[in-house]
Length: 141
Image 1 (cartoon, helix red, strand yellow):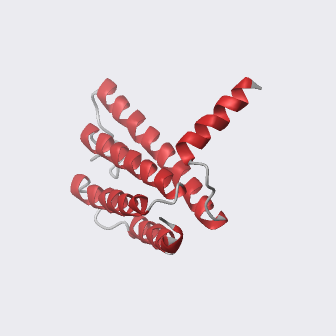
Image 2 (cartoon, rainbow, N blue to C red):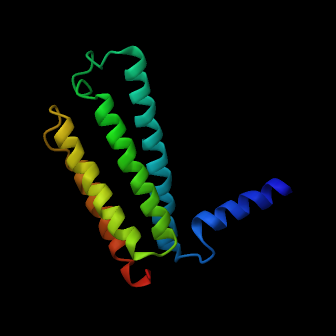
C-alpha cells in the first residue's frame, strides 16, 4: 500500500495534478514511452560500441553508427521526453522544446549518417507528431 502512495506521489510531482484532454494525454504517453525506449536503446548501443570497440560493419545501413551519434540521439530523445512531460503538464514551452528536439533528431541523422540520404518515414512521423501537438495549442498555458 505504501508503494502505491509513493508511486502516485511521484506521478503527481512529475506529471502535475491537472489532467490534460484525452487526446493530449494519449499523445504525451505515446511520446514518453517512445522517447524512453529509443533513449535506452541508443545508450545501450553506444555502450556496446564502447565495449566492443567495433562498429556494425556487417550491416551497411548501421555502419555509420558511432558512439557520438548514439549519445547525441539519446540526449535528444531525453530532451524530447522532458518536452512530452511539459506538454502533459500543458505548458507551451513544452511544445517549443518538442519542436526543437525532434527537428534536431531528424537533422542529426543526416549529419551523422552518410548511408541515410532521406528517411521520409522519420520526417513524416516527426511532422505529424508536431502537427498533432500543435493542434492542442489552445489547451496549453
